[in-house]
Image (tube, rainbow, N blue to C red):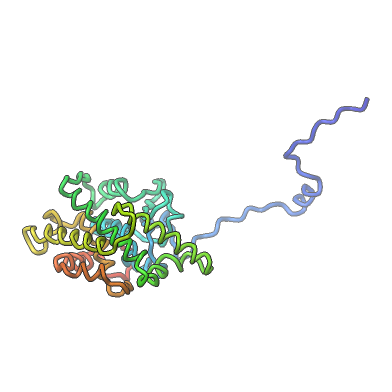
Length: 297
């Protein structure tokens, strides 16, 4: 009987391939350096906040065009945290949403919310224990998270006149393909409509109701700030601006910025009815973004 042959391993390299690699050995090349315009925070030791912004605005530290991102960008500024910002997308975020902070290694990315607030509080020069919001603060925060946010969603995503603005901020940067742009526009507008209907608990979108509730929210915020002890006070009579001030500024800055590109100015015009909120925005703008020529923000 012939000798039994051992079965060939699945990982046995075929003879022709083995001969090829003997003639041309595989070489491992060194890793390429990052582009100069995208410096490694590993080398600088500077945290990076990933936000919705443009490649032109990021190096200058200009305000993000997204309220959620601008809220935390502003909070880091008022906390005197030195950081860089980078353009990003939700798909690049570990949590699936922007913003997120990439601290120096070996720390992992930090999503926005309580974890980011805790990180800021534990790092100098902020270095302070975050205080739990009072029920009063939570009530006013709810106005921002519901009525003001709902009006923002309608103004940007559902108002036909503001379609060019929406396209410039979110649609065109995502793709050059017309079909992809059309599909993406439909998706984001449908998602915004669903959020609006959920927030208003209604079967149809009612712009008059949405903007009336936004006006009531701005009126309540204005009355709160007017009731503080001095004209230059911050919300809840804090000695310095807090996360709540940053939350308000995230909307007022984008609504009042004349270069932002609003064509349907219904919501910006409503906000301008409240001079106290306009001045609050101007004070924080001067405090946090008076110089947007620097790299560090």
